[in-house]
Length: 205
Image (cartoon, rainbow, N blue to C red; front, side):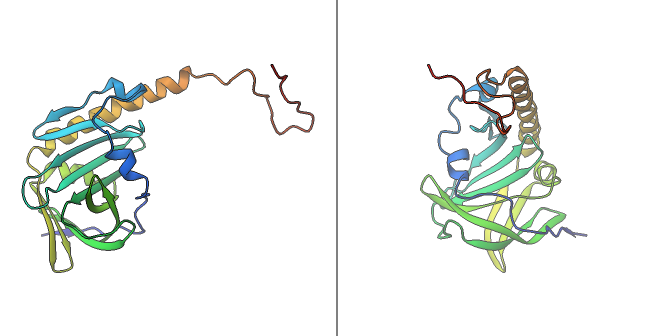
């Protein structure tokens, strides 16, 4: 029996920011925590740290019409987002649609997505409940439909090992970010209380 999950609310993502954050130079080395996790290939998927050091992602580009690219991101705070792009699609950035996502036994019907574009491809981005990465890792296929119109059929072979490594990446990046935060000190030039009535500006050089 297939289970259907209703996900309340709109996607908590900002499509105007995602292309820069997740697709432009993602696989290049980046400073701080991301340098502690170089990109690697796992089971036909690429796992890497995001440039903003807020988490990691797993991605794959499929052969076939339009060269569909899928990206599953996992944030340090536990949030996730799914991006799917294709050369031939006409969806526009910021378009708001509802698509149905189905694994073998679990589905997300009429799930809200937001249109986006990156690297010459167009597609959409959305987020899901915390269960989604596990479903992604344990399923053979993800079916995406717009009403009765099929959008994509994604073969998820190898996703189990890739998502396991994705979680490992998030742990490494999160630990590096926490270490950096603990080591940072507030500048001595800043007043203890900048809103106090008697605060004075620092002396000029």
